[in-house]
Image 1 (cartoon, rainbow, N blue to C red):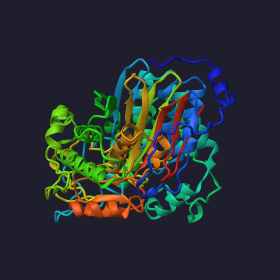
Image 2: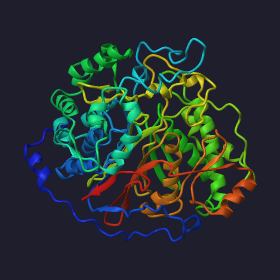
Image 3: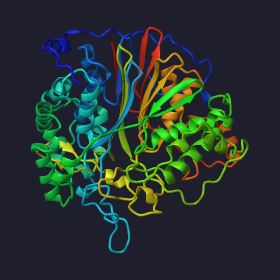
Image 4: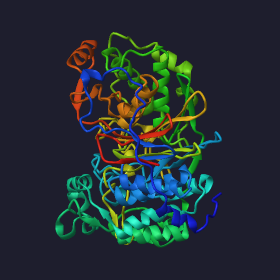
Length: 574
């Protein structure tokens, strides 16, 4: 339960200085990357002797650190970071979406919280198919695209069970950012500019495009409507969002635009504590998310397959990439055929995460030749998410991934609330056999049903070492690439003994079974490696940066945190 703290906590927020970053000296990886490549925008790790927050927004990370310095624990700081992301990272941070949280307390308690959105009660299986039987874009843009949001209820539930501060205390930094404003950076400027056409179909245009022009870098962005919504939540709790003035604003916008979320949908929403997936890899313990997230099972299944091969080939070698691709292929086939909301569909999690099952899959892998993915591989993935990782000075750790699905969600703006609504309904199987934007083909297990959670790739994960101490906290954004990148960062640290900075900047690959190809970061791997993979029968597709991750790792004397060199964000410790 929450411990009511003294008013002196608020004074401490402004008075406790942060230690200067220490140089990175924990060099563990003695090899070189494939082709000698390093991501050109790589930055060294931030150091914190006591605690660390890494997220997709430096301002949100600062909000989390503020709470840690005031005496809050990792859960307090995670909730503060989540609400701050709703202000500073509207691309994916939100109160109009949902997410997953993995918690590991210093005393060994572990918990996983599912606050994924759910389909409204009026949702139907064929609601996104027209009279000719063809898919429309109504699951992507507009009022029908939104599921019932879970973010506010989820963050409150985490705070209530494991936090030490009040909701008002942890929300104070986010309220300040919304009310007083923050400086627009080039990343937000570019992101908004690319989404102007979608956003300006709805009421959010006035906030982000005053006078018809995108807010410029260096300008101060104030969000008074969002500030008021956050103040109401801080004062009244989640009831303000689900059965109060904010819910009234959501329903009014739904009715105005032909949406189907009702007051009853909002009143009935509940986050769910689920049994964590706990597995092992090379003597380390992994704690990760169960369904309705598919990420935890796929990460676990993939690592189990790879573990059967003993020490893996060198990083970046064709032999290593071949094994990765074949393991991912098999895990994604299972993911797309067998995983869904466990409250609606039986999920064989014990089988999929067992070492014995992994050995049967590993035995199918030819180490010299690529396999072929079956023609129909049902599945579906979200597009844009945000992740954050937090550790405190007591050894508590939190990995969180949250989303509104597409960038800026459905683009529907709640005018009186000051926030975007998600387009998570697009994560359901609207029409079996039809590939989505990622080329994944959706199946019956993930069909639309009222009250059902849509399947997700989010993969927040905590890695504990053989001594029982948290070693790594990691999560990522990027649709199906979340799963493969979280897996690769874990491998980079545990298998290849890289520093966190190297583990994050190392070139990445991706395989999701269909399309049947290995995606690689452009210029990330040598020509000889690519030629060898092609000779094995793999198709190669080049792309720019794969996924957007954040991670925190234990080092001598404290913690390292690394922002994603491929995107925006910040890691701050003290």
